[in-house]
Image (cartoon, rainbow, N blue to C red; front, top):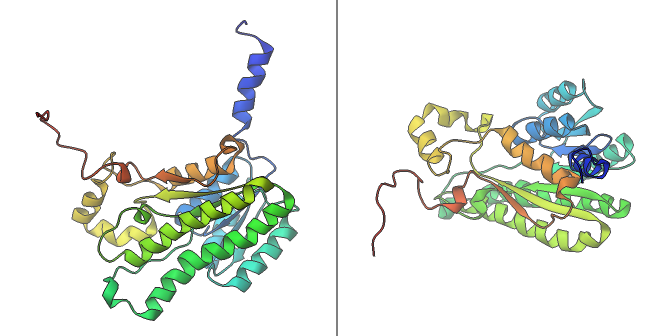
Length: 279
């Protein structure tokens, strides 16, 4: 086989094409900011037409307008915790395109508070959006993808599903629940040709952490939990979303893809090792 072997060239080109989303339709819930906005941009950059949805009307319209200069886009104001609004979003999606190839959900909320001090209302607020909202999303768009026989569903969990700190028990429980929802649905939809996965970020530099930037001690302490000693950018998480959206991940389903900078792989800061252990 020579360097100009056409069979080899064709195989190499097929690898490149695996990441191409041209002509596909994607839905991103949470597209007004943070990981959701970055995901909408990443999918558009790879050629997908993108339906942007969020509770923040101004933010989601801005995202849709920005990517609309490059691909077909639309904006919808949606409360992710309300079943009727998810149903309305599904109806709008069907009008936008005959097929839905990719559906991503990112919205979440947390209240940092001791477990024993949580009110019923605070628990409901966290659980209704973080867990019930993901259930509603996966059920609604899972049905669409099952019926069409193809698609990629992506939910957003968190490394807090695996490791906690005081005050985040309820948030962590909902994020752990998302992984189990993904696994269960992946088993059921696999025969229909639908993949279901979760991304699992750690610390991401978004507008939500702006108050922490005024506290460099906390900012740096959290960064030190990662192997890279830094926070991630939303685009780095969005790249994982793009991978799971593409045919490059065609044999991946039921997975929780860690995008945590090594946080859950190490126990404490990875720096300062100066001695060799002796028995």
